[in-house]
Length: 380
Image (cartoon, rainbow, N blue to C red; front, side, top):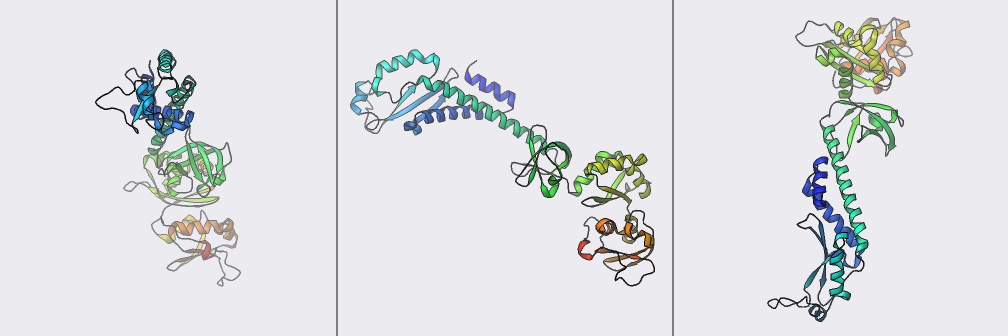
């Protein structure tokens, strides 16, 4: 099998373009020649011959690299109709392959000192190595491109990888032979080398595959992965809000079905909380509150406080004040205000204040998070 046939075979097995690969081999041998004989770096030419081998030719200028008299003496001026002149270029074949040894010896005997290079047999090994590197490089590039293309089809879906290292503010994740980036802000700071990583594939940006763990789409994809009723479409996720350590998912039955929001919660939580436990693990052992969706933002926010009994409520355009028993204040507010803050975001309240029942004055008795730490949820 000659080199051109080898190139075609490699291209077919690697899913590469054979002409592109053949061109890369020609360029690699030309570059190897330029590196070996830098004086003539710009004078080399490569091409495929009829036998599927790479021919190498170097060009000399009459009057610069050799005299017109020497060219005529060696029989290079053999066309009376077009005689040589100073400035003309003459192409000289370099017989660098082992099977060209006899041709090389005849060339030496005929041209002798006019040969621009010496001992071309040394170049044979370099040319072969350069061609092999080119083949390997393009095959690897096509392999990586193929893997990237396959991941483009996974945009919006959850994948599992292995954390490799942190690099320039991002976690590099191995997805089975191709690397992806999970930025610190998208969840990369939560992992160390060797950890198993569950993340969502985002649209490919430039040359990188980008992952995220902090988007609502990631939450929805993981819930669909873990809860059959969501994957089937029987249960819809009406709202998702989260922050470090806690998240709330509001669910309802599919539009047009007889499935109530309360029944949808049971399906998502699973028997003995099995689905909820898997979701908590998938989200880094966060507390996951699955609550029934309510079209009324007041009733919905109260239900989103996750089991806290609300005794009274006051609502303005953007602030919801709930009254609870003294012993329920801590649960209603949550650690660092997270419970009240997430309930507010889920239903679009700028602020949700928690007040102990029986106290009219907010000062000293209001356990609500400040409006500065409560944000509006766009999905609510």
